[in-house]
Structures are given as structure tokens and as C-alpha cells.
Length: 386
Picture 1 (tube, rainbow, N blue to C red):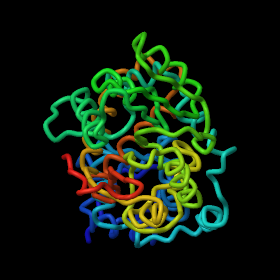
Picture 2 (cartoon, helix red, strand yellow):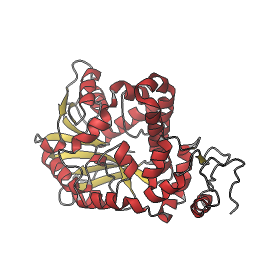
Picture 3 (cartoon, helix red, strand yellow):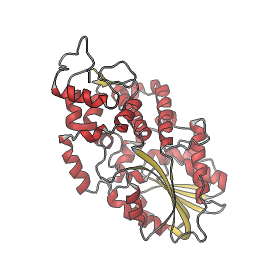
Picture 4 (cartoon, rainbow, N blue to C red):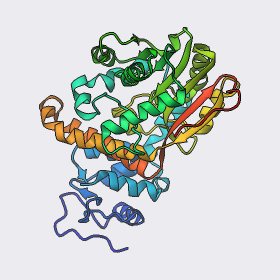
């Protein structure tokens, strides 16, 4: 492999070093060049990036990006190529051992820790999220089957859930992890149901109350899901299971089973991964979603065993790529209004988060599943909606 030649290398670079040659040859397998001219090529701005990435994985790579030590015009395409070529399997960062052991041995999603993600991520400010998301403030994957805009995709997703749950006027629905209340508002407006939503974000609860039209039968409860004891006709959980943690999957299913009436339906909407391991990406864990963890289908099925019959599984993970790119476009467009408040490092952190995740879904490293479950099996069978 011929390495790209720098006419004037930045101070401290040694493009003939073994680590530089190793990375250049590795990236070539994904058609990526160091300091190349294409949008997805990696531009090195300071020394130490390669060593940091090799020793600390995505934590080192992400922190170097936040500091402006490297760049790429199309981060999404860069990471799509990296992940599609599975280059991560060729690197075993030595400094991630502690993080791996910590994830395996500790329950990082205890009731006390559960509030951390609300305070660190969801409480950034409602105005910030309103500028990035759709008009209903739906911070989960849209359904783009027939949609052309973000608003249409999110409304299509909400209606898809309502249809899968077979909602009917008068039903009471529990929304575990209700966000800003977009599903509850839609279900109450369009299907005449009553909704109770659980959230661990004070900002979401306060904004959601204002967002709901006056008179809609919707209630926000600022509480952990483990504290809920009422029974409901239907249960929905959209984008919350990613914060539960594998040590708590069984308890989550036990709570859902306890709160669902015998003839009810439960819909679980969650991001998932392809391989069962418990190590969370350390950069995402540190800067975006503390204590988060993605499940596999097998882990979900194991947790539901003897409690639920899985009636339907629907994967539309490729739609998250398009959703994230729409969020990124909105973020870039509206960033000038938040630049002074958050600063350049936050801008690079958030850009990295959105575009790296888009690349991961594009590469099919991450999935988006909707599972419909019943307590005893639907008599005569469940009619699938898509």
C-alpha cells in the first residue's frame, strides 16, 4: 500500500513510524487515507492522534476529535467504512481493560445511577432539543418507509406503534421513558386513550406538560420505572431500554409484566447490537449516555422468558441513519443560536455523536427493533403491522 505523502507534515508527526504505517495500511482496507483529499479521509492536525486511538480506542479517537486534533468532512461516511470493514476487530486497545471489567462486574444502571443520564444528557435544555428534533420532539428513530421529511417519519413511527398496540378509545397506556410526551400526545389525540408517562428528566417532564394540549388525558410522572405498580391495558417503551443494563433486563420485564393486564400488549422499541458482550463504547458512556448499554435480541428474549410471548419482531435499523442525518442537519442549521452557550468543544462532541452513530447504523453494526409482546399469547395469533 502506498501511503499518502505530506508535503509539509505538522510538527511532531512521523509518517514513517511503525504505528503510522500500521494505521495507514489498516485504513486502506476500508478505502480511507490519512490526509487524503476525499470527504471521508482523515485529516491529522496534531501529533498523538494515532497513538491515542491505538491505546484508547474510540475514547482516545473521540477526545482527539473534540480537541480538534483531527477532522473529516464526512464523519458519517468515515465511520461507515471503518465499521463495514470491521477494522475495530484488528485493534485491542490496552487501556480499555478497566472499563471492560467495570462493565462486567458492576450494575451501572441501579436506581440511583439511572438519574445520571437524565441530568447529563436529557437536561441539556429543551430549546436545544427543540431546534434539533421534529415538531413533536421525538428523540427516537423515525419510520421512513413512505416519509420524506423528519416530521412525517416521526409521525409515521408513532402511528405504527399505535397500530401495533391495537389501541382503542378508553384504554390506559403506560409509557416507560416517555421523553417529551410525543407518543402520549399522539395516542391521546388520534386514538382516544389515556396515558401515564415515566421519565427521569426534570426538563422533559416540565416541557412535556407544557407541550400537551390542554384537556388531553396525559400524566407525567418523574420516577424510575421500578417504582411503578399500577396496571394498564397497554405498555409502550420507546428508546428507554438502552438505559436499563443487562443486569436489570429481567427486572425490567418483571415490572412490565406486573403492570400489564393479562390480555394486554407491550411494545418495546430499542436500539440493539449484533454481538453479546457487555462493554459499552467508552466515549459514548463518558460524554453522551452515561451507564447506557445496548441489548442483543437474545438478551431480550432471555429476559422475557416465562413472562412474555414475543408476538412480533420488526427491524428498521437502517432508518436510524436517515433520522440521525436529519438531526445533524437541524443541529448544524441552528448551531449559531447555541454557540455562545455551549462552545466549540461541545459542537465537535455533538457532531461526532450524531455522525458516528449514523455511520454505525449505515454499516448495520447497530439495529432498531420493535418487539410486540403479550403475557399469555394472543388467542388466534397476532396480526402483524408494518
